[in-house]
Amino acid sequence: MSSTSYKAARDAFAHRLEEWDWAGQGASRRHILEAFLQLAIANGFNSVSMRTIANAVNIKPPSLYSHFPGGRDEIVAESLRWHFHRFGVALLEAVDQAESAGAFWDAMVRLHFTRQVTLPESNLWDLLVATDRMATILPADLRAQVDDWVSLHENMYVAAAVDMGFKQPEERVRVVMTLLEGATRWASTDPDDEELTALTDRAIALSRTILEMDF
Image (tube, rainbow, N blue to C red):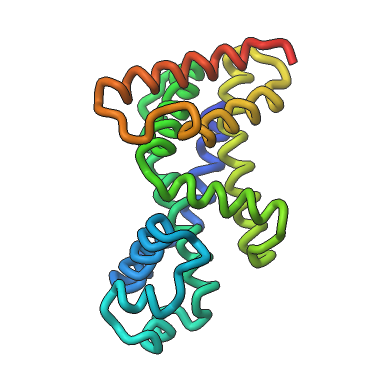
Protein backbone atom coordinates (compact mmCIF):
# COMPACT_ATOMS: atom_id res chain seq x y z
CA MET A 1 0.00 0.00 0.00
CA SER A 2 1.58 3.30 -1.09
CA SER A 3 1.69 6.40 1.06
CA THR A 4 -0.69 8.10 -1.39
CA SER A 5 -3.23 5.30 -1.34
CA TYR A 6 -6.74 6.33 -0.37
CA LYS A 7 -6.73 3.39 2.03
CA ALA A 8 -3.62 4.72 3.79
CA ALA A 9 -5.20 8.18 4.02
CA ARG A 10 -8.35 6.60 5.45
CA ASP A 11 -6.30 4.73 8.06
CA ALA A 12 -4.43 7.90 9.08
CA PHE A 13 -7.75 9.67 9.55
CA ALA A 14 -9.16 6.76 11.56
CA HIS A 15 -6.06 6.61 13.76
CA ARG A 16 -6.41 10.26 14.70
CA LEU A 17 -10.11 9.78 15.37
CA GLU A 18 -9.29 6.98 17.80
CA GLU A 19 -6.98 9.30 19.72
CA TRP A 20 -9.98 11.45 20.64
CA ASP A 21 -11.46 9.04 23.14
CA TRP A 22 -15.07 9.94 23.93
CA ALA A 23 -15.66 6.88 26.07
CA GLY A 24 -15.08 8.95 29.19
CA GLN A 25 -17.59 11.62 28.22
CA GLY A 26 -20.55 11.22 30.55
CA ALA A 27 -24.15 11.66 29.47
CA SER A 28 -24.36 14.99 31.31
CA ARG A 29 -21.40 16.48 29.44
CA ARG A 30 -22.77 15.32 26.10
CA HIS A 31 -26.19 16.74 26.96
CA ILE A 32 -24.59 20.11 27.66
CA LEU A 33 -22.64 20.01 24.40
CA GLU A 34 -25.78 19.19 22.43
CA ALA A 35 -27.65 22.02 24.16
CA PHE A 36 -24.89 24.47 23.30
CA LEU A 37 -24.99 23.41 19.65
CA GLN A 38 -28.75 23.84 19.41
CA LEU A 39 -28.65 27.24 21.12
CA ALA A 40 -25.85 28.42 18.84
CA ILE A 41 -27.77 27.29 15.76
CA ALA A 42 -30.99 28.94 16.90
CA ASN A 43 -29.66 32.20 18.34
CA GLY A 44 -26.13 32.69 17.05
CA PHE A 45 -22.81 31.63 18.47
CA ASN A 46 -22.04 34.82 20.41
CA SER A 47 -25.45 34.95 22.09
CA VAL A 48 -24.96 31.70 24.03
CA SER A 49 -23.96 32.30 27.63
CA MET A 50 -23.39 29.96 30.54
CA ARG A 51 -26.77 31.05 31.90
CA THR A 52 -28.64 30.20 28.70
CA ILE A 53 -26.92 26.82 28.52
CA ALA A 54 -27.80 26.13 32.15
CA ASN A 55 -31.43 27.05 31.51
CA ALA A 56 -31.54 24.74 28.50
CA VAL A 57 -30.34 21.73 30.51
CA ASN A 58 -32.30 22.73 33.61
CA ILE A 59 -29.43 23.16 36.05
CA LYS A 60 -28.01 26.16 37.91
CA PRO A 61 -25.22 28.04 36.08
CA PRO A 62 -22.55 27.29 38.73
CA SER A 63 -23.25 23.57 38.26
CA LEU A 64 -22.01 23.80 34.68
CA TYR A 65 -18.51 24.35 36.03
CA SER A 66 -18.54 20.95 37.70
CA HIS A 67 -18.80 19.47 34.21
CA PHE A 68 -16.70 22.08 32.39
CA PRO A 69 -14.30 23.83 34.79
CA GLY A 70 -13.01 25.97 31.93
CA GLY A 71 -16.44 27.52 31.42
CA ARG A 72 -17.79 28.62 28.07
CA ASP A 73 -14.43 28.39 26.30
CA GLU A 74 -14.14 24.73 27.25
CA ILE A 75 -17.70 24.05 26.10
CA VAL A 76 -16.98 25.69 22.75
CA ALA A 77 -13.79 23.66 22.31
CA GLU A 78 -15.41 20.37 23.29
CA SER A 79 -18.44 21.08 21.08
CA LEU A 80 -16.14 21.60 18.12
CA ARG A 81 -14.27 18.38 18.88
CA TRP A 82 -17.58 16.53 19.35
CA HIS A 83 -18.84 17.80 15.99
CA PHE A 84 -15.66 16.66 14.21
CA HIS A 85 -15.78 13.33 16.00
CA ARG A 86 -19.33 12.62 14.84
CA PHE A 87 -18.47 13.73 11.31
CA GLY A 88 -15.43 11.46 11.34
CA VAL A 89 -17.39 8.42 12.49
CA ALA A 90 -20.00 9.02 9.79
CA LEU A 91 -17.30 9.53 7.15
CA LEU A 92 -15.56 6.27 7.95
CA GLU A 93 -18.85 4.40 7.85
CA ALA A 94 -19.55 5.92 4.43
CA VAL A 95 -16.20 5.14 2.81
CA ASP A 96 -15.60 1.70 4.28
CA GLN A 97 -17.92 0.14 1.72
CA ALA A 98 -15.91 1.58 -1.19
CA GLU A 99 -13.95 -0.91 -3.28
CA SER A 100 -12.18 1.56 -5.55
CA ALA A 101 -10.72 5.06 -5.40
CA GLY A 102 -13.59 6.41 -7.47
CA ALA A 103 -16.20 4.89 -5.18
CA PHE A 104 -14.24 6.21 -2.19
CA TRP A 105 -14.28 9.73 -3.68
CA ASP A 106 -18.02 9.58 -4.41
CA ALA A 107 -18.76 8.32 -0.89
CA MET A 108 -16.82 11.21 0.66
CA VAL A 109 -18.59 13.80 -1.48
CA ARG A 110 -21.99 12.25 -0.80
CA LEU A 111 -21.47 12.23 2.97
CA HIS A 112 -19.92 15.71 3.06
CA PHE A 113 -22.67 17.27 0.95
CA THR A 114 -25.53 15.53 2.76
CA ARG A 115 -24.36 16.61 6.21
CA GLN A 116 -23.71 20.13 4.97
CA VAL A 117 -27.28 20.66 3.76
CA THR A 118 -29.12 18.70 6.46
CA LEU A 119 -27.17 19.51 9.65
CA PRO A 120 -27.11 23.22 10.55
CA GLU A 121 -24.20 22.73 12.95
CA SER A 122 -21.96 21.91 9.99
CA ASN A 123 -22.27 25.47 8.72
CA LEU A 124 -21.96 26.85 12.24
CA TRP A 125 -18.59 25.24 12.79
CA ASP A 126 -17.35 26.01 9.29
CA LEU A 127 -18.10 29.66 10.05
CA LEU A 128 -16.30 29.45 13.39
CA VAL A 129 -13.21 27.90 11.81
CA ALA A 130 -13.23 30.45 8.98
CA THR A 131 -13.57 33.30 11.49
CA ASP A 132 -10.63 31.96 13.47
CA ARG A 133 -8.47 31.99 10.35
CA MET A 134 -9.16 35.72 9.99
CA ALA A 135 -9.42 36.85 13.61
CA THR A 136 -7.66 34.13 15.68
CA ILE A 137 -10.47 33.45 18.17
CA LEU A 138 -9.70 29.84 19.09
CA PRO A 139 -7.09 28.71 21.63
CA ALA A 140 -3.80 27.76 20.00
CA ASP A 141 -4.03 24.07 20.92
CA LEU A 142 -7.56 23.78 19.55
CA ARG A 143 -6.56 25.60 16.37
CA ALA A 144 -3.73 23.12 15.89
CA GLN A 145 -6.16 20.23 16.30
CA VAL A 146 -8.60 21.75 13.81
CA ASP A 147 -5.83 22.34 11.26
CA ASP A 148 -4.64 18.77 11.68
CA TRP A 149 -8.17 17.41 11.33
CA VAL A 150 -8.88 19.43 8.19
CA SER A 151 -5.55 18.35 6.71
CA LEU A 152 -6.26 14.66 7.30
CA HIS A 153 -9.71 15.02 5.75
CA GLU A 154 -8.29 16.86 2.76
CA ASN A 155 -5.60 14.20 2.36
CA MET A 156 -8.31 11.57 1.92
CA TYR A 157 -9.61 13.47 -1.09
CA VAL A 158 -6.11 14.05 -2.45
CA ALA A 159 -5.12 10.39 -2.09
CA ALA A 160 -8.31 9.22 -3.80
CA ALA A 161 -7.74 11.68 -6.65
CA VAL A 162 -4.14 10.49 -7.09
CA ASP A 163 -5.28 6.87 -7.13
CA MET A 164 -7.86 7.86 -9.76
CA GLY A 165 -5.02 9.07 -11.97
CA PHE A 166 -5.01 12.81 -11.35
CA LYS A 167 -1.58 14.36 -10.86
CA GLN A 168 -1.01 17.04 -8.18
CA PRO A 169 -4.74 17.46 -7.41
CA GLU A 170 -4.26 19.49 -4.22
CA GLU A 171 -5.60 22.78 -5.58
CA ARG A 172 -8.56 21.11 -7.26
CA VAL A 173 -9.37 19.28 -4.03
CA ARG A 174 -9.43 22.57 -2.13
CA VAL A 175 -11.89 23.93 -4.68
CA VAL A 176 -14.09 20.84 -4.26
CA MET A 177 -14.07 21.19 -0.48
CA THR A 178 -14.99 24.88 -0.79
CA LEU A 179 -17.87 23.89 -3.08
CA LEU A 180 -19.15 21.37 -0.54
CA GLU A 181 -18.71 23.61 2.48
CA GLY A 182 -20.76 26.28 0.68
CA ALA A 183 -23.46 23.84 -0.40
CA THR A 184 -26.26 25.70 1.39
CA ARG A 185 -25.63 28.68 -0.89
CA TRP A 186 -26.47 26.70 -4.05
CA ALA A 187 -28.62 23.81 -2.79
CA SER A 188 -31.84 23.59 -0.82
CA THR A 189 -31.38 23.19 2.93
CA ASP A 190 -34.65 21.32 3.41
CA PRO A 191 -34.80 18.84 0.52
CA ASP A 192 -37.07 15.82 0.42
CA ASP A 193 -35.48 12.44 -0.25
CA GLU A 194 -35.86 12.66 -4.02
CA GLU A 195 -34.43 16.17 -4.19
CA LEU A 196 -31.57 15.26 -1.86
CA THR A 197 -30.62 12.35 -4.11
CA ALA A 198 -30.64 14.59 -7.17
CA LEU A 199 -28.63 17.29 -5.44
CA THR A 200 -26.10 14.77 -4.17
CA ASP A 201 -25.65 13.36 -7.67
CA ARG A 202 -25.08 16.92 -8.88
CA ALA A 203 -22.47 17.53 -6.17
CA ILE A 204 -20.60 14.37 -7.18
CA ALA A 205 -20.73 15.33 -10.85
CA LEU A 206 -19.50 18.85 -10.11
CA SER A 207 -16.65 17.50 -7.97
CA ARG A 208 -15.48 15.22 -10.76
CA THR A 209 -15.70 18.03 -13.30
CA ILE A 210 -13.47 20.16 -11.08
CA LEU A 211 -11.00 17.28 -10.80
CA GLU A 212 -10.75 17.10 -14.56
CA MET A 213 -10.17 20.83 -15.02
CA ASP A 214 -6.72 22.06 -15.97
CA PHE A 215 -5.65 24.42 -13.16
